[in-house]
Picture 1 (cartoon, rainbow, N blue to C red):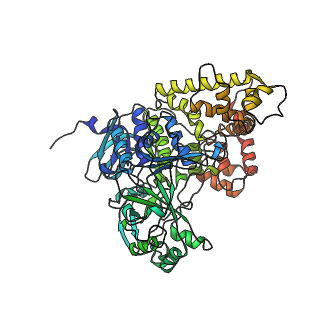
Picture 2: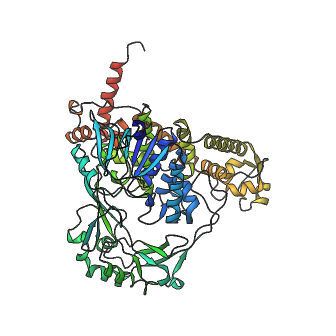
Length: 631
């Protein structure tokens, strides 16, 4: 029998699961200098997109850019594997704009795997994990289904929909984490044995149809945009060709097929107990909940440049396959369509994330981190964002450094994590722009200005990234100074720009740019910097900072006030029941959730502003008692 060298199976960080959370977590830990192991049930489906192969969207696109700003990988792979990229909400303000890309599913997976395999501090193995190993209540390792044991200082679970996963198509059900892949049966039981609470959630996919059986000639086309805007702040040198998507819609005939067969849906027959995503409902839910609607938009989106598979976005369902075919054939352009892969729903175990610290470590099991759908979220982007947070903090635990807490006032990532650990969320969580009260300053365009310095400081973002950021900041400052100090005469302005006869005397270029009808592109055309035209990303920041200066300053004042609350730490053993002025509901919830700061306490559902004022008085009194007299 071969006796292994003990060091062979000992790692600083182990990540279980190679979906979007696991990929970012393992890369972050490895790039921060930790000897890292990534375990996955199937090496061939790493970074897979079992639902729509798309990245980004409103709020989600901002998460992707924040992951990139910190030194993550999702944005780079998207920029190298897209079929189409466009900006959503382009006609609206920058606070609610975002990029969305339709990705080549196989290319994305292949390219991410290539990055993982070439990361020096990272090993990848195919294995199913059955049991976590504890010592004095803390994680020290794990055991696989085939009996291998690995030791670690920190472990990250990113198991997606695989924990006791069960797939449903009509009244047919079988165990699987995704269609065609095993579910992880033992690990979920092991977590419950260790005292971790779990609950059942549900998500679903849409059918894939054969492009050759669609009458595309009668459908509205949805092209990409030119020029292309990339996700990564380190964009590729060359753009890829854009592919077309198409738009169709349901109609009363579609809805009749669904309502006539609604009891064949496992959601409505009682076969599924798990709660589905509120903001990405199945077509059955749409038809039932919005019975007055005559139609729902449906988008036909390719899965790959060399594939005939088309994803039917907007038609998530778990009805029987014959019913799926019947309802599809009622829609314009799909009269003769054929299904390649039927839609399905998957029910799985997740953990209420209120059991986590704000750095995504289990409160009752030191060294155990969780990220992605196991924490009750939906979406690749939410998973990647949690993955990089968990990977960073697992690495810092292995290195005996303090955890990094992302504040909701500094990032969408912070908003996401804060919501998860302070709110009792019952359905799969999806990031929305409306969830961030600071969205005017937490835009997708300035993610690097907000987060790259942090990424560099903790050893994740490269030196080249930092130098690029410094050059960008200096260019923005120089141009703002130039606009502020350059005056032009009214007559000259009218000759060049026209339509501004009401301007008297002279104005600075900065004052001129504040006018809604004047763009920075116009100013740069007629009054260019001596060094030549600026990079698009610099000009974009200049225009936003000038035009929205008043709104941004107002929100920055609010941010400063909030950050003072976030910086006011609450001791882990704080006795809320000892604060008699708190409501009983607040005492119960705060004792259960254990917020790390006053800012987090303010986010807990049921905690009132009056409760926060009471806590502030108590915490300030405690602080003064600890400070020696005369200091």
